[in-house]
Image (cartoon, rainbow, N blue to C red):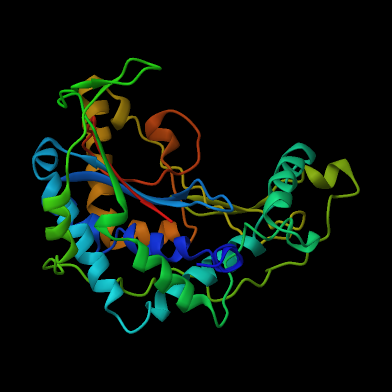
Amino acid sequence: MRLDHWRWYNPSSHVGALLGHEGPKSLTSLLRKRGWITELEVGGADNTTTFAMLVVSMELTDEGFRQKDEILKILFGYLNFVRQLTEFPKELVSENLRISDCAWITREEPGPQDAAVLFAGSMQDWAVPKYYLSGNARLRDGPGLQDTVAKLLQLLRPSNALVTVVSRSCAGTLTEPWYGTRYSLKDLTRLQKEWQNASLAPGLGLPDPNPFLPRSLELKAPRRGLPTELRAAFAAPAKRSEDAWEAYFRQDTEYGVPKAFVFVELPTSVPRGDPKRTVAARLYEAIIQDALQESLLYNAQVAGIWFSQPLLHGREGKGKKVTGVASSETREIIEFAD
């Protein structure tokens, strides 16, 4: 694969968006329903001029640890299915490009220190100065995109994979010399042959269109910059009152990005009435988020819609991506080298 095509088209982002999808018919959905994983993440690593990796990382449950070989068979069966398609799904590529464009348009200018670090890194990857800012931050379409993605998929095979299992239950027979960590090596030749010919597991398929992607990024009000008077900067927002609620609205004209923030406050003492209610409220919140993750929340978060519950948690903060209720200390990592 040509380095300039890898940098220009960033195929790992498209493949990672498919493997790491959390909606219906996805790997995450299937493995969670079987009770084998609580989290699945996909991303690139070690992107140098001569070497790159695509990392698939999973948090396993106890049962998932016992079924780790079957999980890998399902993963490679899904990759076999995607490779056999006439082309990588155009709908998913289009969505990824739209999400990238939206993130670029709605970005906020970095501070001087962050900008210097960003440019210093980009200058190592891009020879043309006009790409120092956008080079690593945007996905691009073009006649070579499908071919570049196809070449990456050809590399994602069992024979080219490094499988790492991290667990307290693993008994190490060897010791590495730097930190004294115990580890073991396992011959995967027999399993690799099985994974190489794995078929698509029932319940897997291609993701449905994301209904939350924005249709327009036009500003509701033109950007006018900072207010010239201090009084205008601290002017009270518009207010509308009814019998049971009050609504406040402030139109931004300073930052000039198509973003909106909605804060809904429902005063109640029930979640903090006593320790039992507090624990019950936390559990109920986690159950609701876990139940809605696949059908609603994941697509919304991919499209840039986030939420948090600061009153229930007793703290302010940005919304977090929900990846499961249970926790596990067992991790399985599959790395593909290019």
